[in-house]
Length: 446
Image 1 (cartoon, rainbow, N blue to C red):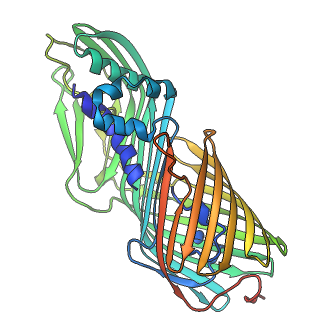
Image 2: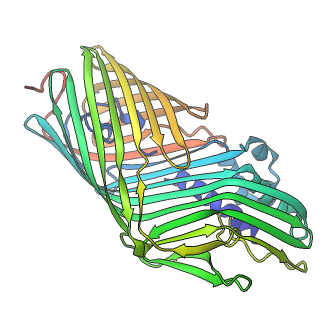
Image 3: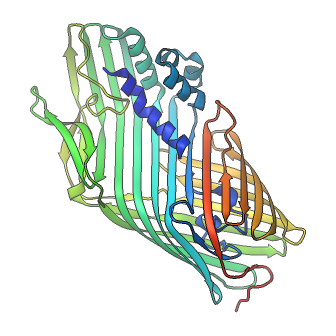
């Protein structure tokens, strides 16, 4: 077994996360920032905008409840130290979760027209969720240290990976209904790039010294255009099993639609509440681009000390034995997000205090957090926000956002050293369009 690949599969997800959250929560109360409409289509910026191609709205984020940056750097520097890193194993949970999100708008712009605000975008969206039980790490550690011929029994349950990648083409509109109420909506046409759900309900491994017995239960559904499956026929049962999945070309494997809804309500002159529902939608994946399999295998391997038949990763497809069961169309839901916010402004709206609750119904787990923020916005071209967030896992993080002219830079989860478990960055470069539109004093309504 190539044990380096066993852990590498898992670590690559973490490395991709640190190089690259679904939305910038810190921008929510920054009136001069165009990025705020991503969290609520009713939150109009003070001016129209055109984002610079590709880098106008780049948002990358991830969170984990166990692994830290120092664990990753240790693996890169020394495998031996990593596999025997007692501090990491002490931090591991029974369920170790990872969520990664990467968003970028290729084209994005917005403008005021009469009493409404229009916006449009073409963007790429990627969501990754993984759940790895502690038992899989323990099995990897024991195999690395003892190798072939070791003994032990491992009953590993509820392991999963979920991936969803698609292109979004959206059009949004918001309008002031009364002097207190503003509503907004965004309609999105979705082009599915890839979707995968890999689930292991149980992986039972009995290492007996001269043999390995494995029992598995789970399923796999993969949809992607240009998918190339590596398979083999088992000589014992004559069934076709998935060995690996490769992709040889880019294309769209599905189509769907989505909807964002939002509203703001000014309770008092200085007090505004708001709410939104984001990513209410689905993608239908074509049968020709979909392969399904099930893991329901009970087998034994005897060997003479030369090694097990081969496992290339934590989610290696050979180890549990995924039998191909067919190809048929399938429909998946987007990871919806529910947002509720409240803001109290003072000093003629130059300063404010905000409270924001965000709940994201993702795979494999729903994630929630509450954010407190202090906001300074003396001019539409200069906004600054400092935020403090309490995550569902009990972790506390700091965030910071600054808008200076066309440049917007923010983080909801500030990097605080090697022990960091949550981090993100949001980069925006927008060219302003038209004059200032201050919703409290200059806009009209019917």
